[in-house]
Image (cartoon, rainbow, N blue to C red; front, side, top):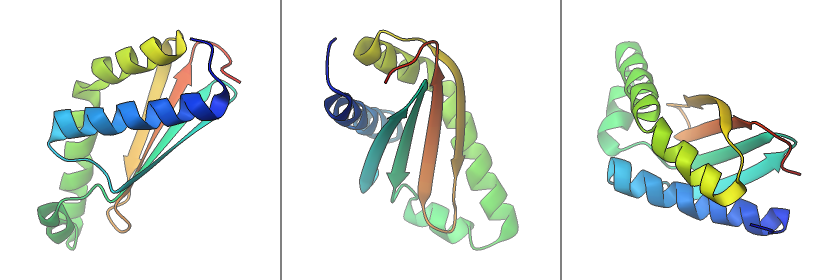
Length: 117
């Protein structure tokens, strides 16, 4: 696929939101994708459910929410990798992710097997 960087970032954002909705039953309120060298950085805002927000008020709940989200990301990793391959023709080398239980922001950093910009 021969797309400019902005269009590719937009397509990745839309595909990742669709994945979130299908996989977790709800999507973020905002999404932004940035392609930098061999990395795709996807930032979601507004990802915490009401229950997760309540759980996150206590330290144990915060740890539980982070652990659950990490497990879900690992379980859905194959699907995310396939989405990115279809859009970029590049393979994911590594995936790094974290969620802020304070802001409800989640970040995915995908390192790809080649430069994308």
